[in-house]
Length: 177
Length: 264
Image (tube, rainbow over all chains, first blue to last red; front, side, top):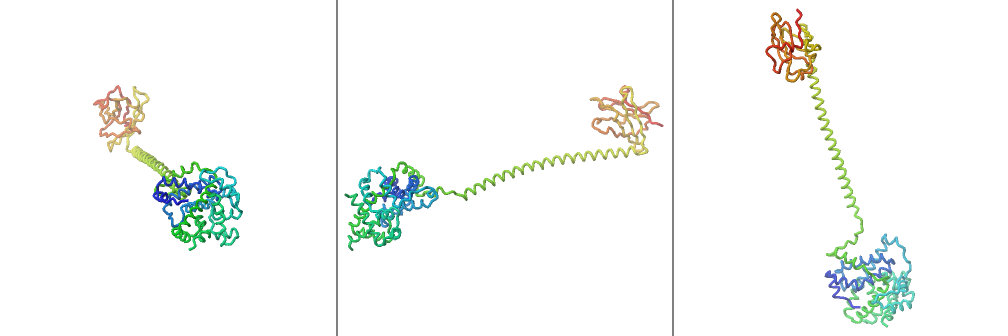
């Protein structure tokens, strides 16, 4: 995936067309990340709106030196979703307590948007080891640090990075095949 | 640097996740600038994660962008009311206090105005009562002085008897000969018709000579019906006639109401 350098510059100049393109590019990712944490569609949509308003407002705080634009957006989404789980309105909803919820979603989902390699994703999920499911859930979807993940999963800190690479390699191979 | 080993360590996946520290991120960024194969690796990781994260979106978003766009318009200039749902209690309390104060002020001023009106009313009533008292005192003092006059033993009382014209009429004259005053009590005479006045005469009997001592021209205004008239004459009798307004030079005997002689 290319870093959309010109788009980012236009967004930072408060160009609304650029903002719309950023939304079109990343809305599903933001929604997906939020939903795996919040597990409620209408609350997730609310958070998604807040996330994009933050992207619009804080566009100038992004710099390539800090990381990928994709990563910057995912971080905002995760933080907003986690904030929401601490709010009163969230505590009043009942949640699916599944530990690796992204797997549940993908196993039961049939209607994918056109940019998704739905067959590849389904195939990947079907073949994914239980430990990979947990590692990806914690590190990618929940934003855990390596240390937090190693404590949560009770595996040595030094193996988290390589374990995760193996899990993601499988995804890449399935999608790139 | 062995870039293949670096890639194999799995740090680039964590870089794309966003789970590295700020310092680590900057280090990775510098390596990516120098090693295109590492950057290429990052792009491929990113592509896989883009697919994975977009795939978990539970449904297609339809109206979200419109809602966001509305808020963009409202926040042009970059200010977004993220805490728009927060209740501004101090402001509400402030407004409530202001409203309560206004109601209180309005109520008090109404009450104040009513009280002021009441005070004015009381003041008017007080003045009316005071003037009534002054009138009553004046009348009492008049009555008292009249009583003093009547008790004066030198006073000569002359009862005047009714004549043909009105058999019910009567009057009295109290004559203070020394002071040359006469008090004419006409409470027993009817009110004179419009355009007419009673006129009081001092009479000498032999020969009959009438002398006017005055007209009772404020008859209806004098509640006590007692009039003071000067009488310097050496009277032998008194009579009262009804005369045209302004009085006459000589009495109209047909209109003689009362007449009485001084007992000798």
